[in-house]
Amino acid sequence: MPTLETKVDGLALPNPFVIASGPPGTNLNVISRAFREGWGAVVAKTISLDASKVVNVSPRYAKLYADGGKEIIGWENIELISDRPFSVWLEEFKKCKDEHPQGILIASIMEEFRRDAWVEIVERCQDAGVDGFELNFSCPHGLPERKMGSAMGQDPEILEEVCKWVMDAAKKPVWAKMTPNITHIEDPSRAALKAGCHGISAINTLRSVMRVNLETLRPEPTVEGYSMVGGYSSTAIRPIALRMCMEIAALIRSEFPGRSLSGIGGIETGTHAAEFLLLGADTVQVCSGVMKSGYGIVEKMKEELLAFMENHGFQTLEDFKGLSLPYFTTHADLVKRQRARKALPRSDGEWSADKFLDQARTLTGEK
Image 1 (spheres, helix red, strand yellow):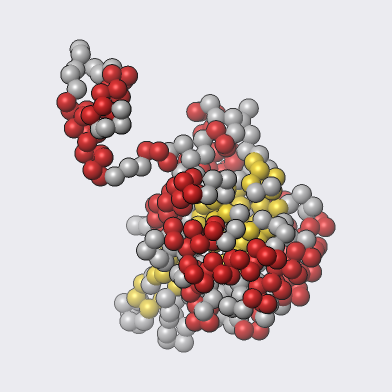
Image 2: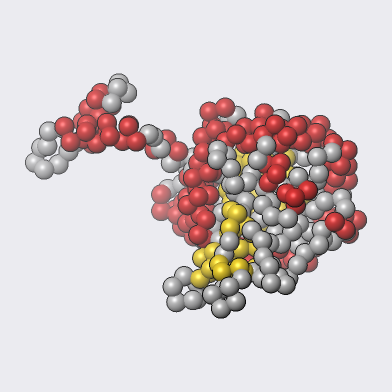
């Protein structure tokens, strides 16, 4: 029988399904629930040393529905990182590891461009027992005004320096979470990996404006008559996330073999997860899907992924990790391959697969 068990950066996970940083991991109660429901790991909501600077507003969500107004395909939020005191988080991290010693708990952390702040938050979280870190270089709204989040993630030079600070202090695995609001996601990913990070998480939300209310003429979500650019998530961003994860996986394979990738973006089924794993991800993270369908969604996702594996004869996740990566090429190469196929003689209306591949490689210069 296939197994979903996997080891990533030394962390033993019962399955590759991870709660992504956000509302589903906002306190001890919901994190504990996630472990009880069978999630492979939890990335807690992003924290900082001084929560007094974090002030949320309401309403802070807006949804995009498919035709008919029932299915949510897009989700915008303008929610900031956790506004709960750091001391409370440390106590809850300790309690969580006491109650769920086998549960993989990842602390998502964010700070300003100060070495002492990053070192302090890493050391104190480690002392509280977390199993690893995810560095939030990706939040697209609110905190970039303080040069945090995506403001760091869009500057590879600054990002690399911060990652070096963290790696000097960290004794646990470190993932750097990338912003998609950048032209080439390989650039900041490379900077994080050069600094020594064990892996990359990608992607966070896309900068967006969900809608303009045609009655009030105000953008939504509307707070006291005004709005702001928010972060777009849910199933509508999955094709973009797949593309960016493919690019990062190709970078890892060519320049940083052995580093990990946690895929994020519109994952709501086991078959969605299979696509990310085929493109090189080690784990997959879910946030909006949990907000839409609840923590119990993981059971069906596990069943669907196992069914996919059984159908193809895969026994472990490693059997098919990155299997689809070699099939990406250039448009010029596609033209050559199609010309090669059209030039081949037919026999009884059928082509010999071996003969086709042999001649195609010859004509495209691969042989």
